[in-house]
Image (cartoon, rainbow, N blue to C red; front, side, top):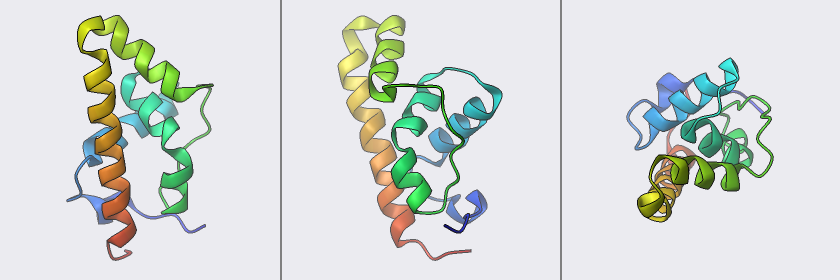
Length: 99
């Protein structure tokens, strides 16, 4: 796998979530963004975005739990919106020119 610089993906939808998630993972922080990026790690790694190994087991459950802790009534819709956003990012990155 070749690593892709995030700068080449700067204009894609969801880049802010990916950047924050990667930063949080590197710092060992458990945040919605780090859980989201961990959940999407196989796909992100496949497109060249190097995702650090995570201590999140069951990243999807972790993400939902974090969102529920923040606001139980909106957790489901926020979870779906975040997942849609990371999928949108991955799709766009798969079709973006490298480098």
